[in-house]
Length: 355
Ligand code: B12
Ligand code: SF4
Ligand code: SF4
Image (spheres, rainbow, N blue to C red):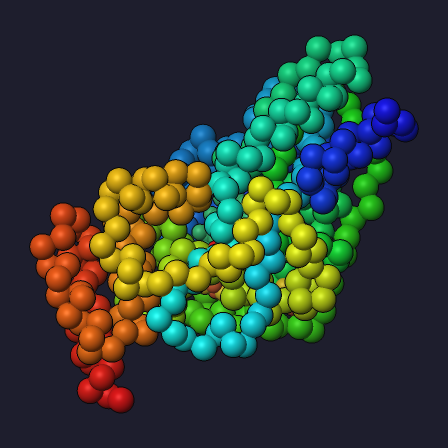
């Protein structure tokens, strides 16, 4: 039996469920909303139009609109395998790289189930009839600001929430609940200091001085969220990244020194180390794609986006021999694939001439 105050019991149960971070804050007006609005107005959200919808903006500005009657927000961190800087892996080769959050099962399938178990546990420990809403990257919430307010960490220069003991390789999730769980919070101050490793390491220089990201130029955006042809500059800088990018987290001293690499087993598949044989992926059929990535975050890119990214990585690493394989894609059933293959052929030829 778990003993202590209800807050202590909740945090203990959260740890049992695999969450490494848990804190509590209140819903309310977001201190950083003006910065968010500025980001939207400047078009830094690229094609992520869902971020700019009026009702979504209103909820981000005022999180009491998420669940009227909510008195507390339980904010949690769930770890995934930390891909640290490995100079050997940094050398470009014929293998593509996947951001480590996507090595295992889709967190959208794993974390909500755990949040529901946690709510059931809370219900067993209170007489009040609970009303709640759960989120993990699934709603119009400034998740990082809530996490700061719940004492989980600080917003690093790379724009990620960083915790002094667990680095930044974790997902955030929240439970909005009609129970008053508020208690004094010990905030974690900014520990970036004079460091700027992430800013220097970002291949596309898309990290802004105010700790936000120009999504248009972010490899993560271009390989996950963008549904169309890849931005040429970002494509060239993306090297062998095929889905997402970890560069600004890989170099962070708080990950290098303190990360908990024993991430929960369901999201941690270190044996495949996120490396993909690019050429052998070119012939992936729709059936194969759906089967292989059914439970993976990679399904978000869809087969055409995944193939676009594979071809882009080949354009950065491929040789004359690769051109033959790309020429075979001229009859591909997806227009995006045909278009990207054509561009890649031109890029490889141009590179070979220059070399
Ligand atoms: C859109 C989005 C993206 C976009 C834009 C990223 C960005 N940084 O803005 C793209 C597609 C590029 C992206 C990439 C990634 N993402 Co993303 N993304 C989101 C999403 C859905 C919204 C973020 C957003 O609104 N951005 C717009 C900016 C303006 O808002 P913001 O980032 O919240 O920034 C606010 C704070 O920084 C605040 N602020 C700044 N300083 C301070 C100081 C204080 C004291 C306070 C209170 C507030 C504050 O002001 C800003 C404006 O409100 C969130 C989930 C969510 N609902 O929050 C996940 C989220 C941020 N992503 C996540 C992840 C894991 C990633 C990737 C690591 C995936 C990958 N490996 O490729 C990369 C990391 C890229 C990076 N360096 O940020 C995690 C981050 C977890 C963590 N430890 O921080 C989140 C929280 C999802 C989750 N539930 O776990 N993402
Ligand atoms: S995810 Fe990659 S491209 Fe995006 S900010 Fe970080 S290092 Fe730059
Ligand atoms: S690399 Fe340095 S500047 Fe960037 S988030 Fe980590 S500590 Fe902060």
